Structures are given as C-alpha cells and as structure tokens.
Length: 177
Image 1 (cartoon, rainbow, N blue to C red):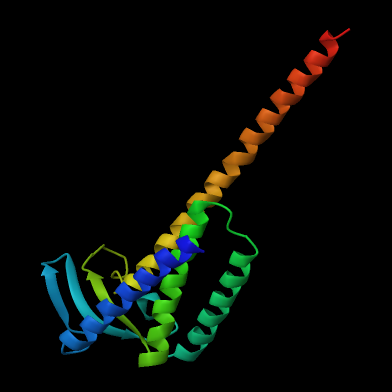
Image 2: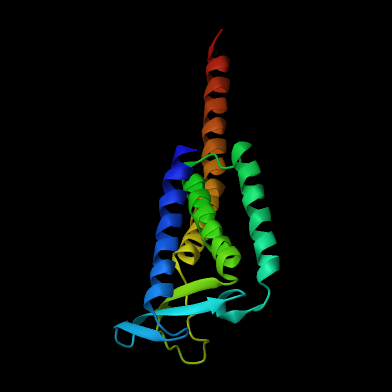
C-alpha cells in the first residue's frame, strides 16, 4: 500500500499541476508553444474522448469507466492480485493516471492534454497530445506486459528445479539399502 500511495499521489499531483499551468499560461486552446522546434511543444488541447480524438464527445461514459476501473483495481489490490513489485508499481502508475484524467473530466468536462511531440511519420496519424496521466497509464501497461513475460518464465524455472529436486530424491532413495 505504501508503494502504491508513494507513486500514485505525487504523480497525480504532478499531473494536475502541469494541467493547471497549461490552463492558466497557454492563452488559446489548440495553440502550440514550441519547446524544441519541430520536435516538442506545449499545448492546451481539450479532449472529451481518447487518443487521436477517438470516441470524442463521450466524456460521461469515460467518467463511469474510470470509476469502475479504480474500484476494480482497489478490489484486486486488496485481494493481493499484484504479488510482485513490478505489478504493484504498475498499479500505482495506473491509479495516478486514471485519477488524473477522471479529475479533469469531472472538473473541466474534458481531459487537458499539454505535451505534444511533433513527430511526422509518413503514412501515420500525427502523435496525439497527451499529459502526465496518459504517460503513467502507458508506462503501467508496459510494466504489466513486462511482468507477465517475467511470470511466464518463472514457472519453467520452478518446474525444472522441482524436477531436479525430485530426481535427486529418487536417486538418493534408490541408493539407500
């Protein structure tokens, strides 16, 4: 629980502080302020949907989905569904991200996106604007994938060790008179 809170609360605060800054310092919505020319900009874009504007104007369903996800995570967490440090870090990041975006949806009626990489890949959609909460959610997803890959390898090692142990016990039992 301590790890969850020590990740979730500061990242939630950072997310909200950066969004507050964008709302109060970027005068026009959808204006971009270059930080590194042709690479990275700050912006204030309102988003009532998901990345790339998918499912836009669906703010309320995302509020309910977020609340349901937080409840599900809390139940799973207290039932010890996240046994290793990697998955518990993932939960902390996921909680921070969900809280950050649902707070925006409730307070502003949309999510505030403010970070924009000006990546122009031929044939691809432009990279969407995002925020600290989105980065937390994506990082959490990566940690869960990494954790699941590590978990798949663990049973092989355990079964090999138990087979070796079983063989050594069998051998030692046969050697005894």
